[in-house]
Image (cartoon, rainbow, N blue to C red; front, side, top):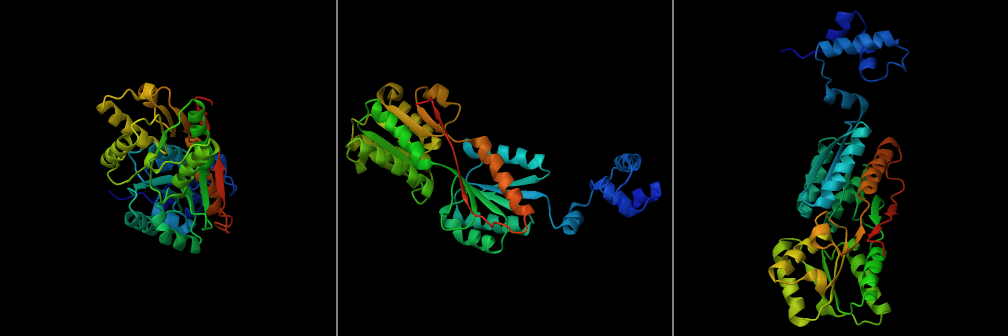
Length: 336
């Protein structure tokens, strides 16, 4: 079946193609076209099942009205929640969203950045691995709109959105100390990320201020690759060397969930035995660990601001002119 064109609609209504185009691209009012004519054009387009040629429109406008989103893992509740907020905000602004997972693989991430660029997305939002810096540098040099969240590069001029990772960790661990915990283990991952380092720094600062020696045997670093298996070895090592550990601080909710599985398999009543704290949470925490203290990430705000900052960059001729890091607040739960 032949695809309906602007020419077909124009001929049927005996109008110019230009007039039809203005109406169907939302410029009827600005061009002084009467409401009656606009209604006539839209009704005719609907009757003839007109579908706009998006490729031609993007070439004409210089935009595809599409954004790219690259996250470490689609299965991670935190990142999938962020993706939902980004998609909703993009849609409200007339943009569609292409989503891909890097699986924290720098080679895959760089390939995705190149792929999204080649497909003509107008801008990219990314939670990057530290190792994908070269491709991001190239995009910044080209003044291509790009925004990072959750993770950032302090030496690059790009817009980034994060929370105060050190302060959130500091407040959580300080609370554990006030509850009487003296041997608090920290379970972390991805030590190459500044955000994770900042969370461990907050933990260490608390211990130092409380006069508690920093014990390397209580610092467990889990490899991101196959973390479900690696965390078992990390926790085994902690209990072997420090059997009387009385608190756990998890730098991410993923590690907390895996630790809860470990405790359960070992027959450990972790809610009674340990003080617990974590950066971000999932709904199952309410059942598994109702007394855990959490620094909640502002998911909605991160998603909305990521899109809004990117769109400002897309609309501005001086793209990425600021390159500032926006630090958002976090919510402590229960209130400490």
